[in-house]
Amino acid sequence: MTNTRVLSFSDESLAEAARLILAGEPVAVPTETVYGLAADATNAEAVARIYEAKGRPTFNPLIVHVTDIAAAERIGEFNEAAHELARRYCPGPLTLVVTLRPDSGIASIVTAGLSTIGLRVPAHRAMQALLRAVGRPLAAPSANASGLISPTRAEHVLKSLGGRIPLIIDGGATQRGLESTIVATTGNALRLLRPGPIEVAADPAPDGKIEAPGQLASHYAPSKPLRLRATLAEADEYLIGFGEVAGESNLSTSGDLVEAAARLFDLLHAADESAKPRIAVAPVPERGLGAAINDRLRRAAA
Ligand code: TXA
Ligand code: MG
Image (cartoon, rainbow, N blue to C red; front, side, top):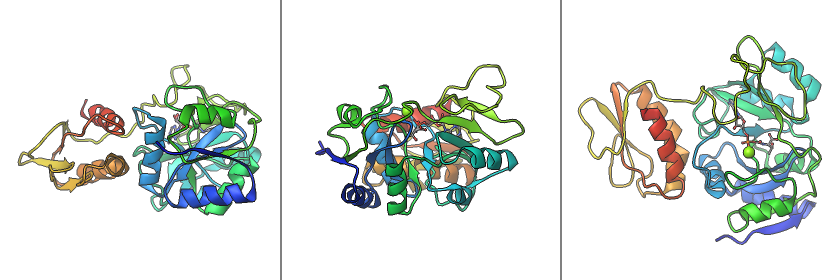
């Protein structure tokens, strides 16, 4: 159990939040939509701790928050449509899904291994101040435990994540109370991935339904067959190890599930790019973040 402090938004509490984030801890902070659970998007283990705190049994791509459009364009490639939306609505409750730049520095666990990224320039002064104090992009899903509703007050965050995170910055009730509108600008037509406070003229989805967050067909999966719970590699297999099962690479030689989650997508990509035609993965225990790791591995094997 972690002692969760709730501090009112001030220069001092902000400095403490920035210090914790640079030390790899997640911190809850208000945005104009809902409270977010923010971590350094360039630090894979810090982002893994977001999943650990939320108890989320799956990896979803997370939204990355930045101070301004220029910072967003250092991470993603903006086409004309993305530029136009950004000029009109940023800062504000809009998330743009764009192509990830290869040199972005964003940890692969943030995008769940995808080659696209959701970017948002928040308008809230607490989140803006935190971004400037940290000087890094911040990954932040809503600050609630998995399966619970999004928090619009610090008390909601405390009820849901108390004992699991070190700090909540209290900035009062959020103004919008609804998560940001998500628009994918990759491809030819704009696609509305999640309706929200901003109404954007975008096609709902190819089949007329709105794609549910986290259920996107675009989830990264390796192109090769994958065998689970392997303890020895066969001749044509690239074995991803865990703990004492060594492998060609290892999720965590010490059996640390935060480290394993942080390395998962990088190692899947490495296995995919290796000369071996098949992938095998060592057993990963189902406790803690192991549930999310195994969920992803089962999908990759299916
Ligand atoms: O208002 C908000 O957007 C809040 C505040 C904290 O900023 N954040 C938020 O994040 O709602 P989260 O993690 O709860 O929602 C992230 C959703 C994913 O489930 C997915 O639907 C979409 O954003 N998303 C993120 N990156 C994506 C990508 N590369 N491709 C498609 N969808 C993506
Ligand atoms: Mg959420």
